[in-house]
Length: 283
Ligand code: AMP
Image (cartoon, rainbow, N blue to C red; front, side, top):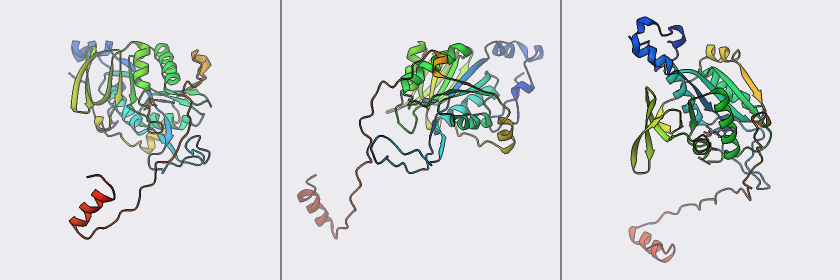
């Protein structure tokens, strides 16, 4: 007998029906394998905002700009919450590293169904290697067996943190995941690669990074937003995790992409060919 599963919403809560002898050996075995899932959620400029480069070319303007959870991290939270609803995970922990306002990003994850949060507070610029080192320390402290990250943060497009974390932990990784199935101690991940889809089987503990087609994240309902206010967020500093977050990369310059030239209409195919040949010199 399986416990009820509800993929569409959070109506059926696994903790409301814990495994019992009546569930039979399969569910009792699954319960033994229940694991904590860590979901790193980054606070980034909202994807609807038109990004502006600072006038001194040192970075992107964030003052007075709407900030939100990195969209790929919303997909990661959704996947983790679904795994909990399926009875595969015991707890979902959302982690954010950055300024104090990252609390809001964690609250969003909590309203989507994560159980508790961890904020690693730092005003320093946190680059992927420092983030990966701090996440490693948290994974070990929490004894988490699965970390689901976004495939990339849309602010700096590094696409590096998940891979670095896998290397630091010595864990297998299923990056750019569009389908994840966990059975027993192993996990099958369908990956989006240039030529199509690649399927890999990983042994847990492991790392996943999410691609766009993995799922459609739920909207947090008002009651769940209210409930999220009561969930715990532990706050710590990089030094508490024994990590020096000093940047290893120096940003030399940030600039806007070149403005596109206005288009021109031509009267005939002959004129088009002539312009391509004699003006653009592309044929
Ligand atoms: P990146 O390697 O910067 O493109 O980020 C990839 C993923 O790592 C993001 O989608 C997040 O899941 C995670 N991540 C990176 N930086 C942070 C951060 N400061 N706080 C929380 N998660 C982060």
